Length: 116
Image 1 (cartoon, helix red, strand yellow):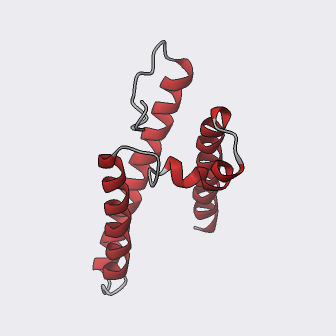
Image 2 (tube, helix red, strand yellow):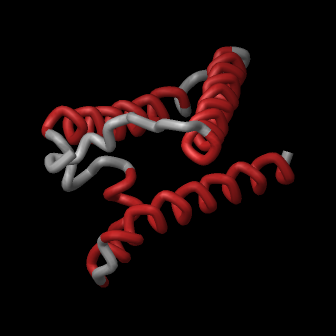
C-alpha cells in the first residue's frame, strides 16, 4: 500500500513540476516560480469561470474529506474505492492528454487564461 501511495505522490510531484516548467518557460520571474503550482491549478491569472471552478472544487473536496472521515465501515471503504477509481481514471486522462500534446499534430485546448 505504501508503494502505491509513494508512486501517487511521485506522479503528483512530477506533474506539478512539469506543468510549472511549461508555464515558466515563457514567464520566468521569481514570483511566478514560487506560485507556478497555484497558477496551474487555476487560482490566479485565469478566466473568472476557471477561478470559480477551482475555488469551488477545492472547497467541495475539503468538505467531503471532513464528512467522509466521520463515516463508519463499510461505508468509508466504499467511498475510498470510488475515490481510487476516480483517481485512476484521472491519471489515465492526464497520460492521454500528455501523449496527444507531445505526439499529436494539433493540440488546440484553451489554457483558460484571460489573454488566451
